[in-house]
Image (tube, rainbow, N blue to C red; front, side):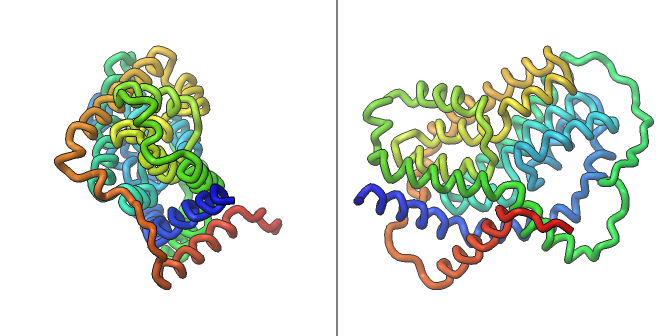
Length: 332
């Protein structure tokens, strides 16, 4: 019974801490969905070489698109003229972050972790795109015109589109993954004692390799990965190993790798995977190296006291948004 209470308390704690930041993230995601349209992304990622990768990473980092949502968009980018390098850069950087995910990272893991995560997503995106471009054959310019529905003008008012995307469409895409992530976080934190992994695993370098092996094949969206990473840290995983999971979990999974194979090629896929894994391990090592200086562990959420009424109200609102997102869509 005590274990069930501990699990329930951890789930509620993570939900309360996430609520104000995730709600704000949903709002900002809605704003970005209007300011940075998919049509805009398509029209600006045809540059070859590192510049195309730079633009793709710059656009991809803040975009609120999860691991599964980025797959059809990346395929469409490639179809409408994006280079192999830009496509790979977009697929590496976009699912790692997003304004909603960064807000959750700030809430649960601190501002240093959030900044570090955004920087790694940006740099790894450029690195993956540049590496893929270097091993890709020369490409001819595409003159195909996009006539898909997503490229047609939207007549709905901008404010309505922002709110609809931020609090209905985006939650519908990630709600189940976020809820599963929160529940898994509660289970891990409730069942595994603090520092259990440190006592039994010991070497943080091995822990990073373990997180790499776990993160590459599984599907976990960037928002849902944060509470799981928090639970791993509480159980004794180093911040660097948790960062490796936050990089590889959202950016690579079986569906993403299969799509990449089809749209950029087998050799390019191998280069993409090696480059991203290398970036993750280097970033993890740097995080562990600078953690004591930057006070990363001091910023990790360890709240035990009851929350105030404002946070509780926001947690209830978040629960309502997630419940609404998971309800079956009404047939028109």
